Image (cartoon, rainbow over all chains, first blue to last red; front, side, top):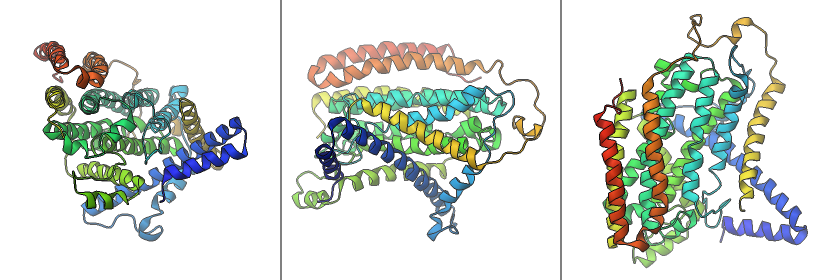
Length: 358
Length: 116
């Protein structure tokens, strides 16, 4: 049967048969670099188009439909346009930090790819503290945002970066707590073991009410962490023009834009892994026939299907809820989500210790 | 792939970003104009530098975040062993979260969570 694991194992075997060990490792590294870059490019193109199409259909219009069939080449054309624009650095800006910020945000987005399991046995690095690694690395992106806002020598950028910093930092807490409540159930931080523990059902269904609460809190928190509407105060167009990347133009702007969409993909992938079973097919208890049919769908299809479902959910939020004010945003986190998720963690501990989950 | 993957992914990110910027540098012939370097402020000439004092509220929330973030780091090792330890883990974490929650209530009473 077709599987990504089979292909990677085949390539590895072929390389080791035909080359020396060091050479094979080098070629493997080159393949990983190539795959990671092409994943970034393709994801960026797909997600930007998806955002525009979803937005259009929510508002009963067609969206981009001129470039290519169904407007599929629209984002490619946009990228080419951005490539041909001059990248300006404003006078009086801190040039070093200004140029460093897009690199930092891209490196952060790329590094989080390491522990994500795209399919059965298709993972760059299955490290034993996978979940902790993801939360640790993803909080570095706030430094890049503050860097960009500070270095721009622009009041809008500065305000946007400050707001974004406060927001990301606050919502990290409840995202972390809802991740921990799943770790309580699995007893492991390793991504592959977390997925393996969901073989007979996903945690969203197995973990009873605390898992559902944790899932809802996680989705709200990651929407805020990625600066998406209704939490997009950091780049509120009507008041701050574009927030922390006001002064960026050309390719540097494109990098920020891409990193934003990649971050959405990554948080949704983590959400799908923790709550919806990653690449694990949908299995229902003892329905042997049903489970057997579900096993025939490749694991990569399951993973990307779940992830894109969550991405669609987050895009849906954008056209459903109005933007919050900064005081509402912070009181939502500190007065509601944080106490609720702390209480929810205790509830989850009781469920896990008493063995009330399935 | 092991920890080599971190270096590889960092290289991939740098190649990707630097490649994009360099390609656009090759293609683009920028024009020179003193107005181009001005910070974007909706057409109004810039007054004063943005690098000055900002709202103290951000600082308060950063401090609160620091306390709670350290707490979450303590929770990770606890969460891994909670099923093995059993009931004792629940009691311990209840005490831990209770003390933390008292601190949270104190911060709330002092008005640290209010945006002015």
